[in-house]
Image 1 (cartoon, rainbow, N blue to C red):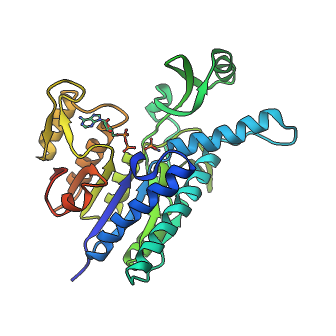
Image 2 (tube, protein in one colour; image 1 turned 180 degrees about the vertical axis):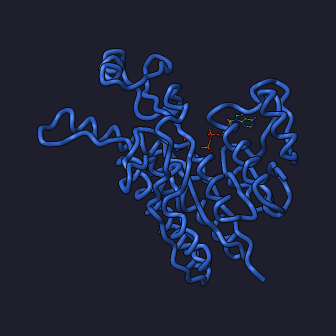
Length: 309
Ligand SMILES: Nc1ncnc2c1ncn2[C@@H]1O[C@H](COP(=O)(O)OP(=O)(O)O)[C@@H](O)[C@H]1O
Ligand SMILES: NC(=O)OP(=O)(O)O
């Protein structure tokens, strides 16, 4: 019997937000992923990247500002670096966990590019926050360069467009590894955003929402389950109020209705729910799960978490 395919989208909690945190977090995350593999799932992993991207972008660009001979690094190059860095930690943690369990499978990371539409409407309303907190003077300098900033507390942070993912360039390579039952990490950070210019792919100064890229990945791979591992065990209604209601199960029609009523926050829960609806409606017998790392195993077995079907 063919193995069932699981696309896992890892959020901040599963990765941490700096070097030591990530080193620790991936050890725990790898155990959860190894459990799925041991239980017979074929696993494809994707992940967020904004803390790592911010760290890399700040380090390179601040250094270049103050040191002759160094040039600033574009967002797309930093995105590629973040895929390499996160993939490196994750694939080694998972490889090690699998070996401990007597499972010998190559674990790889595919440097993944995702095409975006240069006229995507997100260009007009940048919303993805990246990088360190700046003071007012630095914020002005960014704006003078044509970049956008947003006020956050006492400081400012850069915001970039989050265009919709159109196509995953390396999808055939990802599928080949998944078909060979090799765990593969792909489309990290939503994929490196690129624009098609004839045969050339030009990096875009944007960040694709990883939840939307995860949905596309799951659709393209015809996955059985799309699971978002995030900071909460359940999706709730009336989020942020004093009377939240846990959702255990919802249909795509119910999910769309709740989304329309404003229960899911833009840029955090909303893209997870919308990607789930899109993934489920594009095939048969599919389900999406939104839960925390601790709840992941039982949610996949049908207990706990939020399931959309
Ligand atoms: N309706 C909701 N139910 C549960 N969590 C919500 C809801 N709306 C917004 N959230 C927030 O969304 C967060 C998860 O999204 P996000 O911060 O993007 O994390 P991740 O890095 O895991 O993708 C939760 O930790 C919670 O704070
Ligand atoms: N690219 C992206 O959406 O990353 P986060 O999930 O870390 O925000």
